[in-house]
Image: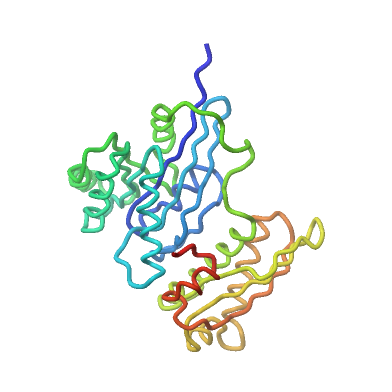
Length: 299
């Protein structure tokens, strides 16, 4: 007798830079979320869809890192992450095993208790911590709440992920398949392209620029089967940031463009003609109308 098919939603929550985006990319087997060593890279909730044929389909929701808001954009980011907790079947509370719990972890644990969902504690980056310290941190994190299970993983190296997936399938509710077999995200090609460019902004610039920058697509056209045209705008808040973004004789923007083009061509499977522009939008992170124009669904 065949087992019933299962389907449902799983949220990934945690502080910034604990590895949520790396985890969802490795779970899905495709790049659905951009990754950076800098904190607060993820700004929108996005879905990664994992289909296990004749077994289950799990929709993983990657949430922005929960942190103390500093402006309207980050308040929106944190509100998104907290809202998702009430909308999913299960939650993975991802923490950095190399560090003991902090106030941010305690805040998230209290928020998770309110929603009374099945929450699994997932300690990431176990490859970077000695065993003795690992046990100490594990006990401290487990003391934060009543978790349905605890898993130690290295998202970067995929260690422990098969066991985590098996546990999730076992508790997933019975249900029909929600998405086609070949669909692995809810994001459009244009949205993913904007994020891939923003990823290179994070990687190619210093600490000041990335959080004050966003990227939006002005044109996205398949000119032929083998060529995609993309015109994208990098928006920053000040003229000084624009000058840094462009760089001396345009070298910084060329560096971002070259790295973005390589990433985009791999993602789209075509050659890419990319035009990048830099625009100053003063204080865009605190203006609701501007945020909505830039694709953030703030109220």
